[in-house]
Image 1 (cartoon, rainbow, N blue to C red):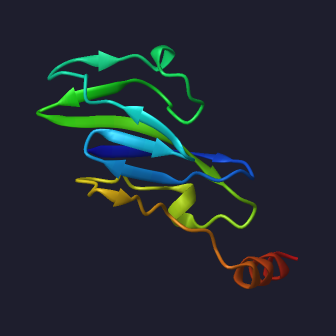
Image 2 (cartoon, helix red, strand yellow):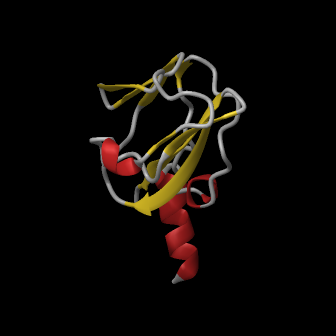
Length: 111
């Protein structure tokens, strides 16, 4: 599975767990196993604000884009995320924000 992340400044959080072709987003399960090779599931067919664009299966791999919420103390890794390739089963590690202390120190440097 390849997950592309689309950052957006917002205060909510996203927890992603992958089990085969099933993604659980903040406790809601999405079974994507019915998407066949070369098929596309349009975003409009997915009842979730977390999917940004369609889900495709290319060369046997699911390719999708998820919204990545960025808090006020977002990191460069969150602002400019790299696609997550060959995502293993289990909790998906998303880019983390800066520590509050580091973010506040950075704001002080700008003043």
